[in-house]
Image (cartoon, rainbow, N blue to C red; front, side):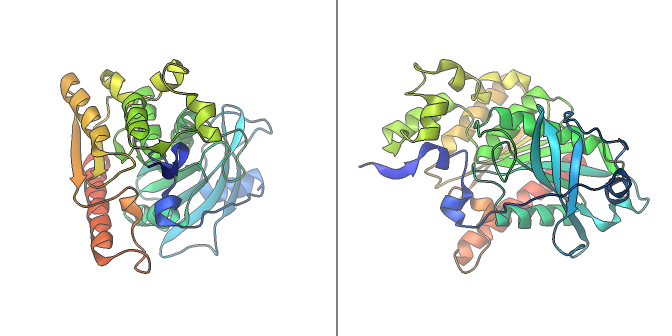
Length: 334
């Protein structure tokens, strides 16, 4: 019997399917060069009116200023000539003359923008002493361009890495990347292309689209929605290049950063076999990684925080997984 899920709402993406949370559709207003410098201490002091990759074009405080020691901003930056949005979170102490901080590009799942639970987790990560940038990929949250699914979105994440390097309070040698679901495969593909990424975390992300697509078809998932057809056609034989470019497990030799892989034991969307495939490939190439299977956890487990929607057990598993990620980042970036 067919299951009423669509391919683009599955493994790569849509915490919303499981977490049922709202997402932010936000706008940003331009500030003068002086205002931008005072807010973010951007090394590049003169902003071009044209869209130059990794350049900050607009910045706007998010909310009512500082929140529990965290300063938050909506950002508009450039990626491939597109104006792409994102959110920046930093400890208030970041610009107080202390040593530059480690940073993390945090890639959300889904194709519908940054969910509210993701904002919550980003702030929690910033409270641990990281500068955190969460991109809204092309085609989302008012960003220019179209949704491509683990393609142009990778360029957006890599442009975010360069953006962080341009901040005076970020240590450019300690920039990591983490992602969940769709953000997980984005993180894997980005880490293969940019060896400066100091550590990478993939939580329940697809690692081999060939085997994942086969899993979906064999288990009755609907792969006929408009976005799936646009990206994957009728399968690997129809669009072989689309599948090959989204199979990071087949290019394990390209990884240089230490990696953390986390998968849920009961994830029916991205089965743990996806994590095992990448782990085997990393073993074969002698790459550094850690692999954690979260017992009894379903897809999206990092964001099971709402006691009105989640059981105590789910919340406990989510907290455990979050601590595993924090421990890994601390060991690799601090």
